Length: 297
Image (cartoon, rainbow, N blue to C red; front, side, top):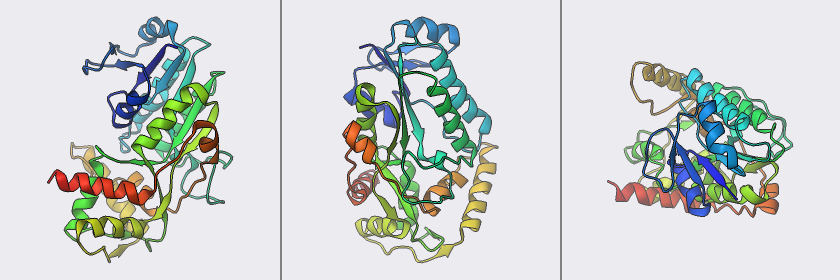
């Protein structure tokens, strides 16, 4: 079975490559075994993918403040891959739980829950899903908030917790849907042979305040007590995004605020049944991330 993969050098991609023998497609040489450098043009992809039985498509953009880039990376790149791979080729697409939006009528959600993409990022992932569906063989994985080793993004939050500068968004009782990177990678690998259709790939949801309490216990500091409204946190995220337009790296975006401040939980029975998805408990993974943070100090 000839398998190609995009995004192999990314954090999820590196873990997927441990479980799948796939040929990485890259824009510039990364030193990955068997990698093929391409400009991802239609002509180049058509030549490379002519023998493809499956493409694992993980590449995309999470520059939440740049709608144009997200459309190019998440939508147009997906379109090129789908349109320039053989009809028999299966597409395994890494999508996101963001396609469900932020306001739900039912919790927990599953594959049958109506989608309501309400941000530029969510819309770009939903459009990518619609393109992938054009393939007779496809597996679309709606992946939760990924965490685990090598996710230094969380170090900013841990640093703020350690220094007593972190705040709780809202009342803190909202649930945050996590999935460990290794568990997500195993689901992607299983979807190559077993998957067909849409899957929620998301593990245990823990209350925002519980997440901080677990992390602070491992850091040996007191959990945060200060609360800010979702509205205020969203405004801070917007200001950070505006700073990104002049070259500053945002530590908090509106998408991050939604991840931390909105109440979301999922059922993953279909992924468990068909892909063998068994996510670990969130506390176990949080402890792992804190340990890595402390070792890197």
